[in-house]
Image 1: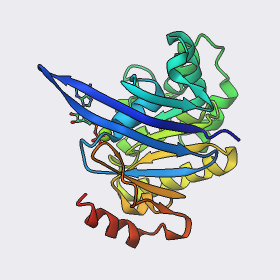
Image 2 (image 1 turned 30 degrees about the vertical axis):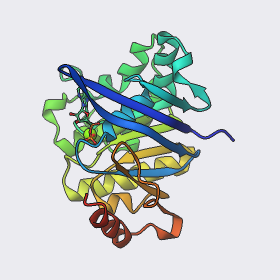
Image 3 (image 1 turned 180 degrees about the vertical axis):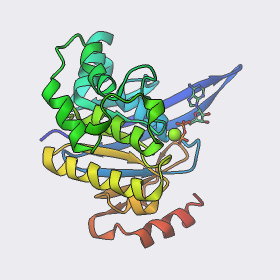
Length: 245
Ligand SMILES: Nc1ncnc2c1ncn2[C@@H]1O[C@H](COP(=O)(O)OP(=O)(O)O)[C@@H](O)[C@H]1O
Ligand SMILES: [Mg+2]
């Protein structure tokens, strides 16, 4: 079976005045179907840049980014956008809900953007799944941070994505809600065989992953990854200390 994500030799820099900031310098990463991979690393190292390149929200300077066996660079813009929206669910640190749309409309929006008839039942089911049905007609401003994140998860899972990209999904919610969010995401992965790339600073969240990788100096640190039975909160703390993260 093709990996859900295959990144090879990914390079990405941003212009900075006359020069440029080299963020990713030949990054390799594979994510298997149904696999949960946590990505850890210091602020500014390029974790969000990596997710954006995989999502197709940002273009690579060099290297290959394949999602479900398809190379984003070889698809035209329209095809890339559609393929991405259907196959990938994105969960942002700051929720990215549209402020003047209510909860149900926010979860429905991806269908409308793609010119698809909304699957009302799927929208309702995903709101139920995250426990937010009773807030369907609320505006984002009428929700707590944790509730906004739950709605953004409903939006991400409504179309049963093959890949979830979660960028510090528990970074702006209280500890109890963060745990609830992680448990929910793990349940969704199990039920649908969806893969997830989880960016997190939280060792407890990362310890739920099948594999934990550490981003350093523009690439995955080759000797630090933790896999399977080696993944634990203690081992993650040790790695973070050793890598000075
Ligand atoms: N659109 C952009 N333009 C210029 N620099 C950027 C842009 N996006 C990110 N950067 C820079 O790239 C580096 C990596 O950013 P980011 O991927 O957001 O880091 P992380 O998510 O690991 O904290 C940072 O130095 C950041 O300032
Ligand atoms: Mg980031």
